[in-house]
Length: 290
Image (spheres, helix red, strand yellow):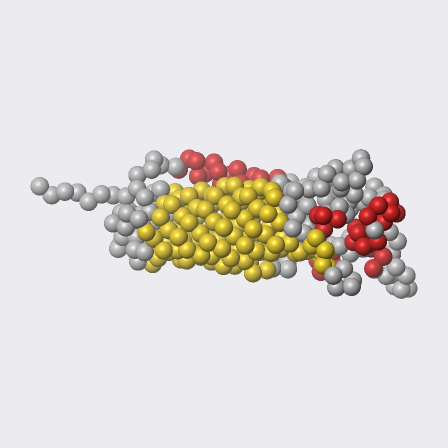
């Protein structure tokens, strides 16, 4: 089973598990706070190494607790991802690299494995799983040998936008977020937690690598030396005799068009509860004495 099927299977499991345990909305318990952690990427320039080239990330979090087992969470997250053939040593003689800012908005459902309460004497921590939908923006960039940084999507490094070629890919896409976490209620109003999740994207160009090499001579003729050089950086490498590697032929595989890129966020969060504070996560109403 390949990585694509593994991630989709996990996402489906999360949705089914949460759907089987949803209970009717009976009380409101809102939380708002912040998260901080690290992001990394999996794709053509880093096929399998977890936490390779990690970057600082953070954002704001809003959670709406439906009951002690079920919650809906929304977050704005800001981070960065990067990848490099040279640093991941993945065996490809491409010498490609990139980095990209990431801005995402996600809405996910959370399923607590244990019933979570704020009341004294009741359970105040639980592991959980989550899955949902993410809208995110990205903008892959690369630094040339002269130190200048270029936005790769606008260059069309695989011939995008030229006659007979696909249009340039969008810098906004959607993803399927899913993962695991741990929540701990501290008193009635504070929640601490940590989570690790993946975003299975619906783009193969988070790293600007997804198709085949375009004819480098034609690319040089129509778009200039810099773009042609960034499209195929193999000649920057030299063999044991000091001879540069040759350019790839037009049509040779540059990326894997059958898979999509993935990015991940792992971090900690702190939220503060508000709204219907007398109920919080404990849905049992006190009995009236007559």
